[in-house]
Length: 371
Image (cartoon, rainbow, N blue to C red; front, side):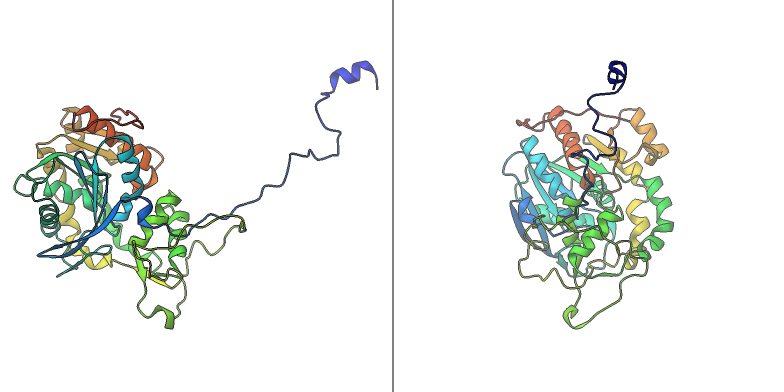
């Protein structure tokens, strides 16, 4: 080979026809969809008895203001698991996550009564039972839970409330979405082969984009079918997870538990804990007049959204007038706090520190309002 030809060719390239040693065919790993127990994220699980029933609650942290978290329709208190762990590592605070009436492991005298008045009253009763002398309280809710938080933000219900945070619920877009809610619910598989299969479905369909969060929270959304060991069923015909990637034999699994119970067989068929179609009579009551109520709440407020397009006219005007803080978290779905628990925790922590409600810790990450 001539000297000129040697200079033209890149001496770092391998001989033609040979495969570079580093270029291997990628191996697709199977995701781990095994359930994660609540105890990985919360310090305590406690049943609170009120006149209305037995409410399941989860707590994290031991000092500072109390952040009371209310989940959306069909979800459970476990939806706040990752967020709670992130938040208490950023600022000094306590978190109380509640399984609302008809959801999770809560049992009441009327689980079908999901009226906004009843749900709001439940919050006051639970707080009063747990904290006879309540600490400074921040009420936070997602979707339906956001509506409950707004309605419960009254001095006669929560006299020690110092702030209100609402996640991804706006009256205008919520009312528009109600017309398609029944079709959405009917499009979900009615049952799953196992809890792991339910977790896999939620992740691969994008209902929950964060697989770690789905592994702890889906146990609060589905439950073992009654008599499931003796019955078999056909999966939903539009099951989107019939095909799976090749498995990775070396991947480890977490301990299998559901909603904190160790005696539940997670390998048996599971069904939804809440029949949301039966609650349709309450849907409009959750969101009707929500924007005006939110703006009228006297304490400092934050609205966290998954997209700016969700803002309706009343809130757009209120935001320009500085009546509340707004943050938009990108690349997430409706379950903002599950999809990006770290980002939501940053927003909440910054809000609490800026208003001098608490003190920052070593892992504090300051965020700024966005639109």
